[in-house]
Image (tube, one colour):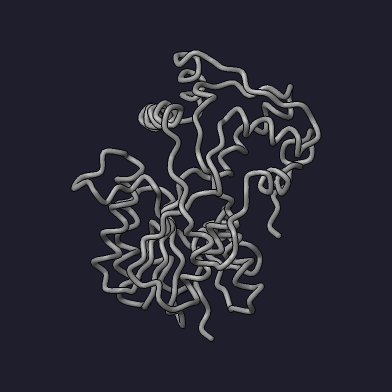
Length: 283
């Protein structure tokens, strides 16, 4: 069996793709700018660093890490060298739009279009909210158990990274996935207020949400992210406060098992929210 190249092999999803492939005894070539000891070094924005890792490879798991335009030359290289690409795209992509009005969707659609033009068989994974985004609350929960932000009633079906990886593994190793656009969600919509409470229960320490004004929340977010990302996120939260995003059955349809709920994610990552005990569950 030829090895599968997994780009972003040290990330939240990529690391689990590697682990799940290895659990099936599928040979893996783990690619990262800072690879694990048994991995290979490469930068997706520099095709010349990727080319050696493609020797003997037919199938690639790809993700966007940086500029979409910088990834396009690497996609062209993949079109020359491999047969199948599974791309971790985004639920922000909207096929009903001729031009994406969400910057995150626009970035990922740029790469999707390059993959479509490359001539490879492809499958796109389009997850909506990642449960791992809640790790951004870890310092606050470890400090005083209070998460402060806007739109605490924003409700979304957050997906466990293990479920994204499980769908990726099926698309990488199985038949019938060519041309698929898999929209991935968690099992049920859950508000930000509920997320904090569930994390606190899993970590064994009280945790609660404190609502901030929109202006205060935006100012705090700007310390971590560019303004256009902050404004896109806040607009999304505002919409989700009145109309939660829909739940899909894609995880179960593709993997044959139910998706993992947010309680499972919180239990898997409980140590991340306890003082001085950071961890990330890979099992």
